[in-house]
Image 1: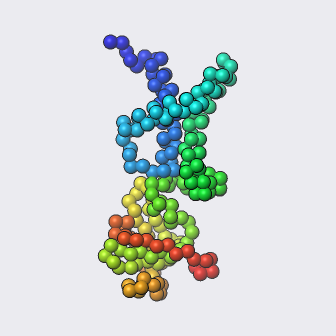
Image 2: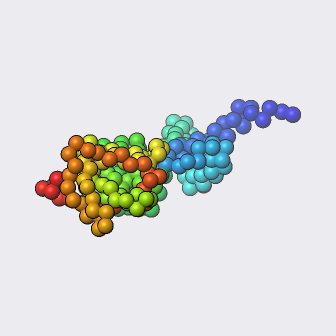
Image 3: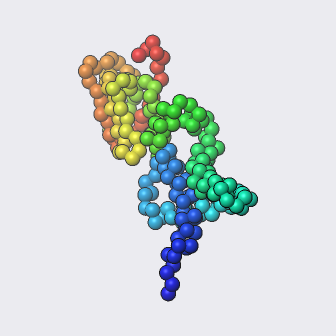
Length: 204
């Protein structure tokens, strides 16, 4: 039996592996996934690469032989696959993702460092607000989610720290008064519902 991993076979495999691999890795920077089994991802990687070549492979074929064809191959194999994930995300939700890709570079970096796996990873952004939590026990807790407050994001387990705790009327869920020098650390598994209440600058 011949060596199936000779040079030409290996090059073909890499050609159909690299575009899909790049796209999936870029996608993973913005959208979290618990499926980290690479063997399960391999068919999707190869399938994406085949679709990618079906759309853009002609750029390599029409390029003149020599440096132009090498440049075309470089763009098709290594550059264009990195553009697919942002394009797909923008088509899925333009209002949401345009703020990531067309705003300040800091927004893009933040999105890459904190990929989104669920609404939990985006709903508590940098804006300050009041947070009211109803625990699975039925009890209300909450406070002001501002400076010093922290919320976990994917891939960490869900948890939220509210730096300024307030007492809450357990009958109505109404905020009553600030509890000085008190914060709240709540595990996501204990939360039944979480409400966010936007505040104006002069209310902080």
